[in-house]
Length: 134
Image 1 (cartoon, rainbow, N blue to C red):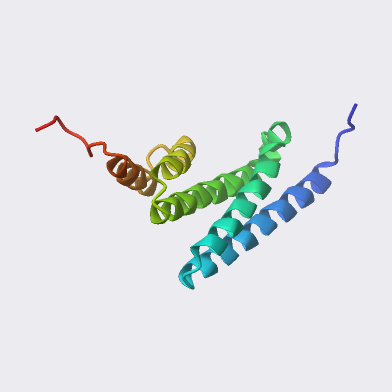
Image 2 (image 1 turned 135 degrees about the vertical axis):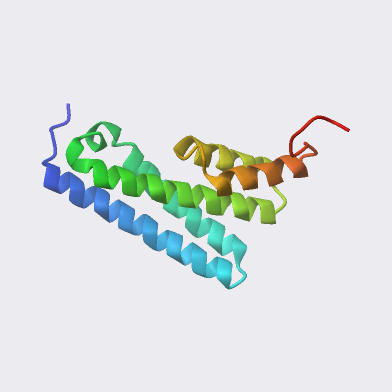
């Protein structure tokens, strides 16, 4: 069985993961601005993997002392899924974009960017933006 990790050690470990994810996200943003979407997507996927490692610590993250880390991880995950949705739309991969939009909406149901990108993906898949036919 595992032993309990002291809170400060846990916070340091999670902070290191989040800092790594934030650095990868920043590298992705830089690559995107440089016109290198493949490199951007690789960096964002790396960042999502690191955020996922943080997410595996849900029981510890639920502690009141970790609310700041929980919020930081959630904001970062949301931004990464929005970035990946935009990249997927740029790659003409609307199904992939929808998957990222769904995950983003699971984190922030009223995210305008996620709703907009989801609508764009649906349109590319041949769906209607809304309203009755005709």
